[in-house]
Image (tube, rainbow over all chains, first blue to last red; front, side, top):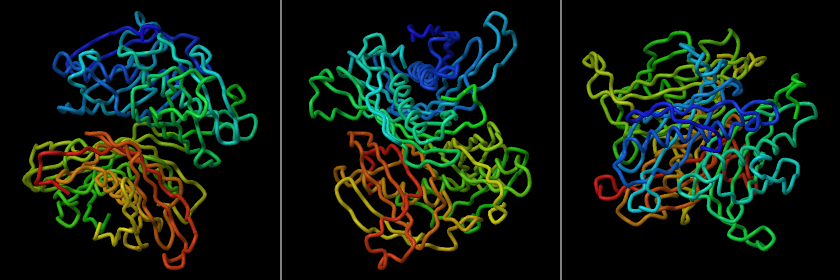
Length: 134
Length: 134
Length: 134
Length: 134
């Protein structure tokens, strides 16, 4: 995530927001942010959201996720939000989205942006693996 | 894909293979290749596979995809394969996988690697947009 | 849907709710409503929701959907809600859920029930096929 | 499944096939087998396949699945196949399909049918719940 220039915007129990500036080198051939990069960032937001509800010393792994690409990811910057829909002992159901904003974060004001991607997934709590602990 | 060091290994009608060397800077916190990077590469392989069956002058866009992460993506290098399951006029159903190999490509011989990720998705043919043509 | 005893509770542009009474003959071996039956009903709600935003004379077909089963579907009755997240000319992105209620509909009052299943899918508008028109 | 007229055709470790005769009362408004019914039967085949690799006394539950509807489910009968892609202690990755056949089973001979639906899902082993044991 560091390589992508992603920063953490907000962390609350079960909800995390990440910000991603537009970068030409992350676009695919059409000038949009690559679908996989979008998936990576929203998946990360969801993983952190799941982790925020787990006990210390555990790790979180993505079991599976589905992304739906509603619109091309074009914009000045992007916000990925991850939320926990249901936290279980072993599995957590998460839901996330990526929104695109036309203006820089400091000028975005009350702009809510446009949803460009939805993600729905399953995260797993990994216990007894201190080497993996997040 | 260039930024990730991905190279095209094989292109056949409806099937594309991409190779990705292991790079420490693409791993997430546990030393595995990040799930989103894996998704990005397999999605690209599937997109190229779909495009290989389309008429010239069109573009391909991912509508949605699901990834299932079977095992941590660790290894010396990775191969992503994308295949077209059904090619329609507007929508194509694609299926892909990522395999991890313990040794460098030139030493991998008959090693078939281990499947670390499955992807199942839907691609759309975009016509009448020469600005997007692949 | 008629065979399942499903009734339409509410239709608004882009949103449909269906009600399903509990029936012992629809349960799987554990006494829960079968996952596939749940999927069928929520998929129907989403299909009707998508259709509610389309022009007359067209048909709607499910391209794909994913269901996540959050909890066993037990209860006195169930409500499936389908919503359109984004309506395109050819494809619509839909999202749905099934909620379980412990008491009969007439006694449920302000009970919001428990979400037992989430569905996220893609619907397609089929034109020029009056034989399929919904 | 009994209500649907489904019969078990083949059980092998990690693979199960179910047969479903065409029934007019299971079709949706267009005369195709309803997508949810297709999902229900393929999900069942996958659940049985996962169970075939588990130790006695446990139960299997679907965590999530995605279905892709390649073609309308029309035909004289249908075969659902479920396979285990990876069996883990808690989670199993499964993959399934539904094929449609134009002629009755006894006349189908070497006909391989047409794939109408793909399913990719995750099953969970439930231990310590003898009341649920399959």
